[in-house]
Amino acid sequence: MADWGELDEALRDYQMTCNSNERLRKMQRDWSKILHFNCEDNGVKFTMDVDHGEIVSYREGHVGTPDIIVTTNSETFCDMFWGDLNPVQKYLRGEIKVKGSQEDVMRLDAISYVIWPD
Amino acid sequence: MAELTDSGNSAHLRRSLSLTGATMTSTGLAFAVIDYIAVVSILAYTVGVSAWLAVLIAGFLVLIVSGLFSELNGLYPTAAGIRLYMTSAMGERKAMITTFTYLTSVVLVIAADAFLIGSAIQHVLGGPSVAAYAWIVLLLALAVGGNLLGVRMAGTVQTIVTSIVLVSTFVISIVAIATTHGSYSYPLGLFHKGIFHGVQALIFAVFLYAAFEWVTTAAEEVHKPAVITRALFIAPAILFVVAGVFSVALAHAVSRTAMHGSAYPQLLLGKAALGEVGMIWMLGATMVAAMNTFNGGFLVASRFIYAAAREGILPRVFARLNVKAVPWVAVLALGISSGVIAAAVFATRQWLLLVAVGSVLEAGIYAVAGYCVVRLRSRESDRVRPFTLKFGRSLGVFAMVVFGILTVIGAFSDPRHPSHLSLLPFLVVAVLAVLSTVYVVVFMPRVKAKAAARVAASRPRRRPPRVTGIAGAEED
Image (cartoon, rainbow over all chains, first blue to last red):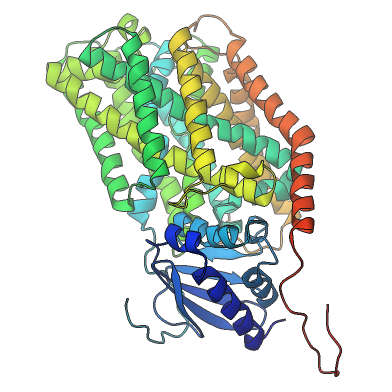
């Protein structure tokens, strides 16, 4: 089980990797969303704010009205943000649950695919 | 950018699919241009205006299917639901074979609609028959181009577009019934040509509802699964009213000889109802319907292919994204496949065969849905079911038997030659099933192994090891 400290470290790396990827920024330039994340194992919740493809902030707790809600366990979130697992495989096994439009779900996965092609 | 304020535990999305949106999505996915041809196929096996009865009975059968998909959607409320419940019920390999075969029906419908709209435009504008194929290529190119540029119909536009098609078809049908002279013979004579022909008519009537269940892929866009459930029950009712009235009007106002040789019976009905104006009106409705099919079909199929490639069960090339985050190889492959199939239909004039193949695939998938419900009632009896179908086991078995029979009979029914059985639909479905099986059994394990090897060789784990309370010790 990962606590907020570990998640914070993973999210910091994820934010930096995403924001420094030119191709991703270009691809997501029309994508501005608020994402809510729920860790179902330890109850940790956090929010990510994406503005025109840039992850402008993330913070503990739920803030604002979400466009996408992602739920899984804290370990999966950590591995996902570090790029150590393929989120699609977890999603297709029902281990990651997402609420949001199909387009947004696809865009969310596209981020991982572009920054970590393998 | 809006300032963020703490909202506590937000459970609702900023935008979610309403009941109206879900219902119109379901109806729009089902009501394609090929449905006009499906009505002609029903009429091939019935007398007088009795086709409406086939549409009604098929509608009742489809309501059972609505219940089955509602239960399955409640169990797995995700766009990947179909994969998940099939895998749970029958194992990964069989689930993949079924899913890939099922997916071909989307390509068939896109190809059919491209062919039918091309033929309709050529009929209205005139010119050599080859011009129809030029229209087909142009329309598919536009659909592919629009998709690659990330152009998508917003939910409200989709609702409006679907409403235009349905209302146009309904109004033209009512006008045709009111203004033309024709008979209303055998209104209840569905089985007048014999029980077997009546059952054959039912198979093609089931096709009128085909793909309505794809609305379950929007399960993540609604507040609660009940929205999808309600949409699944309302959409068949709307489809029955429109298709039923259209079948009566067509049988009443257009001669059987004219409609059976035509790829655009809706234009003939429009002309019978309001002359040239009616024909142009129905051409417009046809184009709008095709737009809906292209939008939904390309989106659903290309995203499925993308996800399969990302999962490592289709070659990696299909996951390539363009600068608009569109899986461009998947979209291009769908466009080319549809163009090739449309060309084959154009060359052979076998558009009714597409209806037969689509009907078989759809009835087959409904039988599979029945099997999944029955199987999961045993295998996953403890899971919470937001929707539990009353008499679910019995209705699941009933669906397996009824749709199983319809699948088998449909496989040997070609509306072009209604008086005798045909091997053609069976052969086409068999080829599709064999191709899917060969891919899943022979090629998929290789693709999976390749993907696993690529991941293993790619790079070391990035996540830092966790430091435990004991100094210097690290967890795995």
